[in-house]
Image 1 (cartoon, rainbow, N blue to C red):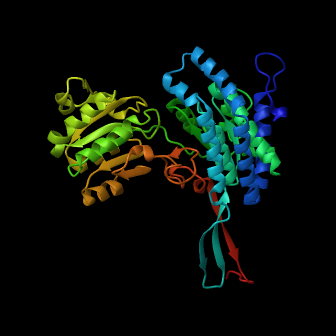
Image 2 (image 1 turned 135 degrees about the horizontal axis):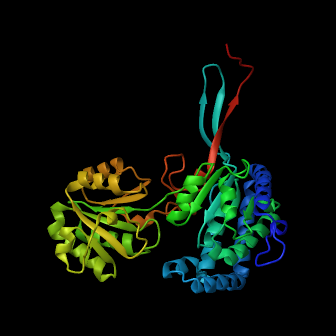
Image 3 (image 1 turned 180 degrees about the horizontal axis):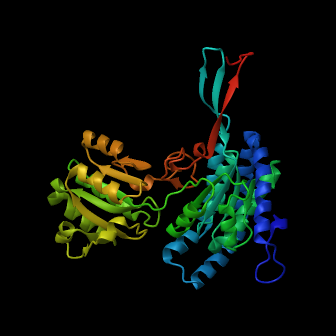
Length: 432
């Protein structure tokens, strides 16, 4: 990566566009090698990188301290500082994440389907890497490891453009990944980190770098995702917002509902799987609404409610139309009473973002209707929305969550980072 280094703060500066094009060419070459790389080498690279992170933990934390100091000076929010922070426990979690991905079955080369034709042709549909994946992300330095590892395991080259605020943290994590690659006989260019904070590098990636990037994955705030979706000239795996609903049906057990609602909202308020709207069936409003609302208020959550919700506690703030369309990413929730599952589904279709939605009920018929009719990437029954995570799905991690309707929907893990081709075997057949 030294030849791509951009000197910042003075001195000679390489042209960003030229640098990015060179990275694209290098990534395409690396992708061809990775597509054929044996799983032992890919797994070995990840295990070596995990070990290097552990032995370099002091250096990682020192680099992160530089980022934290700059972020505080720039007035970063408490939530952003938490996303940026690395400590010994978090570095260990990153290392364990690399090892977990290494231990997963290799997705490349899986036979997805096989069939024989009447003319004797034998056809296999086989999983293949996507190619080169560009990942553009903000704040979280752990994404450098997660994204790089998942792309590598699925046989893809990765070009990573981390957030300016995590510049130093990401560089040292990336150095561990590169050492793992080269020690395992894989090209260092298999995982590249954009070496500049210049925003024009993002624009260059969105053009596809002359056809060398096959897919873009943005991970960050709404403004970043909007820009990527509007400007990208290659396919995008992303979600714009996580306007997540929990619907408490007439058939819900109150104590179970309280447990799920509290965890869905308050476990971590700044993640995309956090609940943002609570819908309560009018049939149980007299018994369930007040306990749920007061529980949230007592836990430090601001509640913005419709007239029914406001009537149960003076602390509830009046909800306005925009509240039903807002991803708060904070300890705030909108609460509304609805007339049964039909109105709940209609509300979610009208205001939701097709990310994650949950129904709480003991009524199996209502549960199946909700799971079938709510058109979201992740739909849950009697479980916290905070399970909207590739690691919790057993994917070993995720590169992001997609709400589109391409083959990658929901958590984008190893399988979603693969395409496929058809391998046709014959014995002299010709077509009439």
